[in-house]
Length: 112
Length: 114
Image (cartoon, rainbow over all chains, first blue to last red; front, side, top):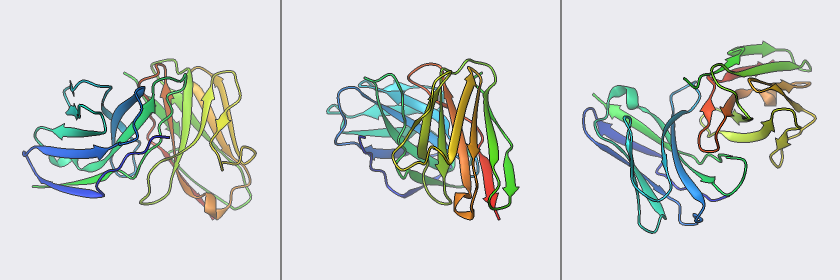
């Protein structure tokens, strides 16, 4: 299973942008990059995913390095509700099952 | 859309008893469902993958006879923790998928074994 490496924690000020990094140096050509977040005592929530190109949606943007060995989740304006653990996950797109193997994630703290 | 529910949300049981947790996809048909376990301050650990109508596939190190998974329909999967012991106390989370690229997670079930 391809591994991801994320900082244990990050801090941001409310209404400022947040860049959450993820390293995945052993990524294969068929691996998709997924981001989920988890609030305390809740199930993970989908944020965004991509393969090679940068992606945008209403929640966030995903910037993928040209060599795909790293990616960055961008929250354009952090709010207190964005405080959560953010997981960067690689999914093998070549198989029939889309198994997720979660890494340790980054705990984001948003200061008012 | 894409709502997944779990029942119960929490359960307390005595050591040696069995506990069943239900996972339902409410507004879509899930061809594949997954079960995860999460200990306090740790990440999610994938336990097993189940497809409707077939046997579950367990991850290495997960006892299939202890954690019984049934995926009887496209909207329901159950996890039964048999002969539960205190070390089985954990947060159990299911997810459901109809397409390969996304999993929708349930709210989790907190199991406490006394």
